[in-house]
Length: 120
Image (cartoon, rainbow, N blue to C red):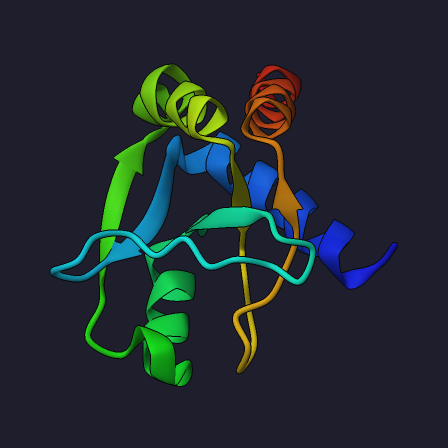
């Protein structure tokens, strides 16, 4: 399994357990950087500590602060809104370049919901 696949799997499992996701924001809002292929992704992490690591270790994100979003709000509002706006969900980005898998919001929702059902 590749590193992005491991990042995604860890995200789904942890979100299914905590029923929350994390993003970061500053006074201008939540970042939506453009990837090499021209797609824009909004970043989400499966824990506050992972979001804080990016804030600490990636210069572009110094000055941001973590924001918790309930899974229900992500599923009902954020995911559909991102789909409408043509944004991907960047999940569990890591490292000095804040990189990781960028996935269609509907796929993130489907995979977390599957993980929730499987743990019950």
